[in-house]
Each structure stands twice: as C-alpha cells, then as structure tokens.
Amino acid sequence: MAKYLKILLILSLSLYFVSLTQDGFAINNDYVKGDSPGFLYVLIGGFGLIFGGAGLSWLANPFIMLSWFFSFFKKDIISLAFSVLAVIASCSFLLFDEIIKDEAGNYGQITDYLLGYWLWIGSCILMLVRNLLLFIGSSQSKIIENK
Image (cartoon, rainbow, N blue to C red; front, side, top):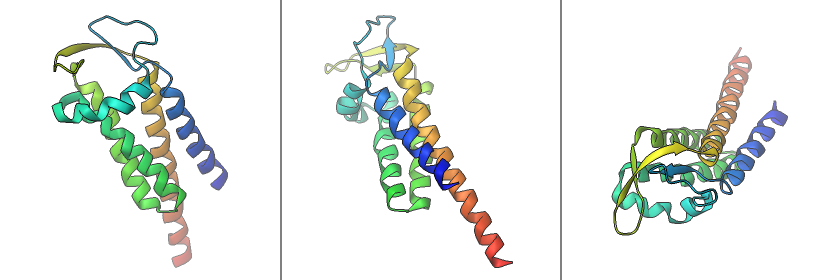
C-alpha cells in the first residue's frame, strides 16, 4: 500500500506542475493559446482574494501545498484536512460565471475551462484520494490491533 500512496503523491505533484504550464480558462470567448498559463494565476491570483468571488478558488494552491508539506512529515490528518479544503476550493471555481480580469477591477465572463484547470483539480483530487486511502488503511490497522 505504501508504494501506491507514494505514486499518488508523485502524480499529484506532477499534475500540479504540468498544470502550471497550461492555460486554465478563457474569458469572454477571447482565448489565445498561451495567454493564461497556470503559473501566472498562482503568482498573481492571490490578489483576487481582495475581490472575492472566483478569486477565492486561488486558496486551493496554498491548501494543496500544505497538504503535500504535512504528508512529508507524516501528519496525515492535517494533510487530509488540507486536501479536502484544496478540492473544495478548486472545484468552487465552477460555481462562478465571472472573474476579475484586470487591475482596473473589470470583470469578464468565464467561457471555458481549459486543460490547466482540469489538471489542477486532478492534482487536488489525487492528493485527497491518497490521504483517504491512508486514513482508511490506518483506521483498519488500528481496528485489527485492538482485537
């Protein structure tokens, strides 16, 4: 089981870093390939927190990073909690129709979700699956030990 947990962790990290090279979404049907790479959203997306709405989804980035961090230090329950928050935050982006599109405070309609977005969500989901498997496995071990 430990081997599969390590593979899931590596896949989660890999999907995340690949997502940074891909475009995340299109605004106002105005999509130019390479115009919205994921790394740009990670760097400046925190400013979206000021405006709320879809910008709150950016919180999935620190949540998933904290989940990875705590998994390396065997803080499994904390890692699980942050992976749950990462999935909720990343998926919440689907609930919004518009997003802040420039520093002047103008909003644009989210018209398409692109590969980078789906890889980003996939990364969060894989980490959650890994943590759930670890949690279920450790719970079963404790039950067996107590018998």
